[in-house]
Image (cartoon, rainbow, N blue to C red; front, side, top):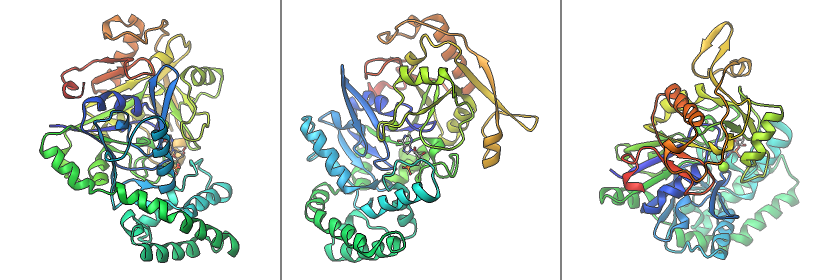
Length: 431
Ligand code: IMP
Ligand code: MG
């Protein structure tokens, strides 16, 4: 029973990278199922040795793990080429172990141009400006270019010319359009050869692997509240990070998934604009940001920081079908005074236990807070739950009671070893 989805339950940056880093050591496959290089998964490989991954699955650091990019992902071929190059320079080989589905839609410079245009002039939601939304828009509008289409040179040239003309003729002068087209042509020989070497049927590979009892991790990017269906629309990304999308995003039957691990940080962060009911705009927020190094791994933007929002987690747990939690960054809260949990919201005289769907309702929420008491001490190397300070355990226990799902793992530091296993039985085959 070896296929597990690891999904984010907040606004991304929950620490999925560090959890997958730990769990992938003994797995056979790690596959990404949505998003693109808007993601930033930070892995701590050693003291002062940090690796930020954007498109490549987090299993890549272990030479025996096969890494797959599923059909649900949008791929910027240039960015992927650069990422593979960065890995190569660090001695991490991808040849023969990093594969891309022929069905992945590609991101081209014109998507990035449109993303910039929308951000600068129209719909500023604080995107990562990587062309993600425009590329998914093309996919749904049936004008996108997939990896398989790109490898057919004639077809690719026609589709790209049509797309540039269609999208950019009102945004950029003719000479700029020509320049964009000739840049794409110039990159074609290198990028098409690169993708050709990496193309593999992800659906067939994973189905066979799971049937043979191989261990497979399906890796989400972003988080539930950035989900285009369930997130704080329109301030969301353009894909479905929720766990239920994983089988679609890699092409396997949904009955093949047997567990969903939901990753949640013990406070809340968000990058970009949009509602954030528990946001801290004061010095407490900056303190947590500095201690927790809460800066975007992709864009370097300071993350907005807030108290732990439990209504969000309740909703995420249901939508993702979470059966165990992975809680992260307990260490960041050590020594922080005045940190609270939000147990519900008040809206028009009513108490809500989950965030509402409406845009204006989201803006009007009044969080109901409770003090959880501070805790102190350096417990980053603690490996047994009972060795944590009593007040820290009280806080974690309270969170678990409120959310209603047990935790399998608790991260108390940046590295893959700074983790406390709470449910060894559940994680038996992964550790
Ligand atoms: P996009 O995905 O670049 O279109 O950005 C849409 C929204 O999702 C913006 O608010 C981004 O800040 C946010 N976002 C996208 N990817 C990530 C991520 O990996 N972590 C956190 N926020 C993200
Ligand atoms: Mg991130």
